[in-house]
Length: 247
Image 1 (cartoon, rainbow, N blue to C red):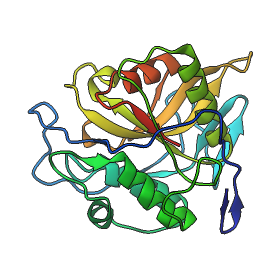
Image 2: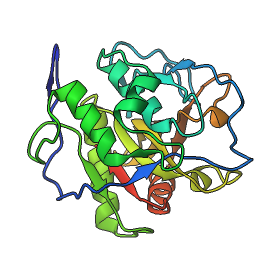
Image 3: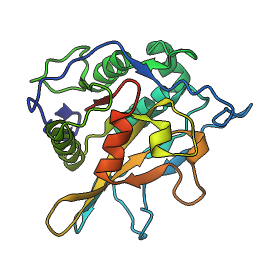
């Protein structure tokens, strides 16, 4: 993956993926209701929830832990998780766009949220200067899944893709079910960014780290930086009404 001063190698060709018009992040319920005024805020992923450590320019490996150094933009309303995650990723690549600009470019709607195909198109235009790269070409791709997919092979390939992209400094987007991640919340299709992992002594993934742009899950210390086991995170993808991830 070539982008200005940084060269990344994309993980490609592990499985054929299908790109269809699906969308996410339109949270309509009283429990997750947006406040009248939401200020855009940023949170650096410079700590994890267990130990304090500084993360330099792009990412740092400490033992078997890797977390990308990214600034999270909290979504500005209850259906802007798509623009928020795309803005966060573009900032990582040194590209400055507002959530409003991205919402317009991606046709974000208060009813349907943001379509997966529009997210990949804008990311590919901005980062790779192409709209629809083939699966053997550098670029973002959508991998869609059947609802409640329990295939061990799908889960394994997803983990390999996430780990490879993290090692290469390449953030991925997950479409997850809010209730599965946070049982106190109602079901809603939502976007988060996969930014890191922790592996055990056998080099197996113990946790994935995500950045969640939803204002309702930010905390004073860690902002939107969360961690979940691979099984927990995969369940949140599989139980989503439109399961998919963008890598």
